[in-house]
Image (cartoon, rainbow, N blue to C red; front, side):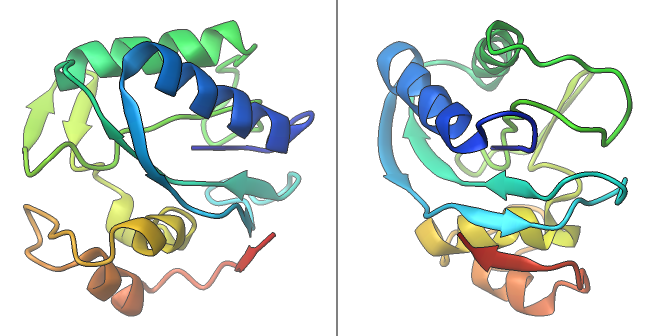
Length: 152
């Protein structure tokens, strides 16, 4: 999850609270990372964080819930890769491979995005990417993305 509009630290905390109170149990959460914008670089830096959630929901049900959180918190989808109050993605869902309209798991860009891999590697370094058959730590090591990612 991440964002770059408003009080992003507060938005991250609020998102985690809603996830924990509504959609499951947070087993782990990474520290917060300051990251350069990816895809559209002429905007403020982002703050990103990863969480490990256990849930009884299906991936589609969870996605619906995540989109509701984003909307409730004021997310407006005005431009691709544009600024946002909060963005919450499903990077992995157990070892499932899902390709449906509106939902692809693992996240199809995960291996290219240091801003997602760094916090995910902190909480799940040895988790295996079910398509690429590499651990998250290996994906981070091999990632070609050179954009800045640092601990807040």
